[in-house]
Image (cartoon, rainbow, N blue to C red):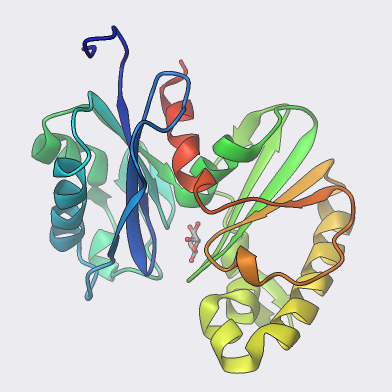
Length: 235
Ligand code: BGC
């Protein structure tokens, strides 16, 4: 299962509410291809999203296995929630179905968990939030993931969840200034709750963050969502 250089190539896929992204990583997690993106099909049902991944995969050249970040709770490759995609994902065996389609081994985890794996230092309490269509979250203790932490649908303020206050719909409705003020409150609240060593903020809308961030809060580029894909095979 190796290429001509003796190296395993991993196709890393990030399924988002608005775009599906992919690139190939080498065994160390270094990108070997340009990141490619297609719009997430609408309605985003499993068969059409799998087709979109297959199209992206075909354009990425050789790979031996695939890692997928999925925007919902994932247990043993099965997707259990998909608030920003389609209800037909509930109970869908994405790892199995995509593996059959690509004819390669496939591992699937939550998108924010995968993003976090690409971002963390592996020491202490590290929290990751992602700002995109939805609000993603991932918690790590000395590099070990607490899987499927769904902060996005947890109550934040004014009877609304983090995702209702800070998801893309809220950003578009209320504008970047108000959204940044809300984010500042969220950061303060999360610092009190988790006493994290580091907080990383990623996702497609992280570029709109315009705040004086505390020293232990870092913005991470959206490509981190794909770079984390290599960590799924570290066992
Ligand atoms: C989902 C999370 C996901 C996040 C970011 C939320 O709506 O429930 O599982 O990580 O969006 O995509």
